[in-house]
Length: 201
Image: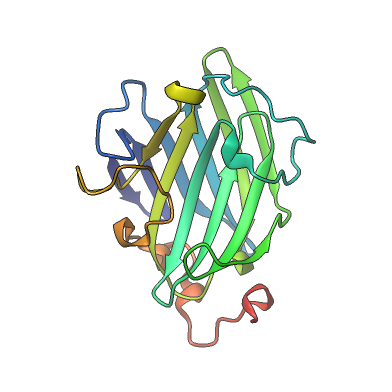
């Protein structure tokens, strides 16, 4: 795992499995930056495993239970337990979930602009995430990846669990998320007047 901050960009690389082992392949790279007044841009560069296969559905549209396929995921957590979950597939499908507490889905299958391309054994993706999808005062972050099938299924994490603490992967262990300087990208997210209709409960 590595993190680099440069101006208003944040760079992350996933190098570990969920239980803190080496992934054994070229790291997955994610970059976060402000795209425009209304969006955050997330770019992905990752190895392409093509297993499980294309889930079907329309590229650029939401797809339910995308976590059953090959994905890269990003989670943005606020101190009050609200968090945004984003999932992206190399074949162009995505899944957006807003959660109010661990696994408590408030909204899901929200739309966003996402495109991807596959070049040999590498895929890349570019997403434009509406600023209003982020809960107020995002303070912590984690990113994940899944690929393979059955006994070869591999789960990877930017911030893995403490070795030996758990027997099964669970991407909703919020206690392992770590600090993100999100206000360097979206300064209004930390404003006392920040509001979002998506988070009205």
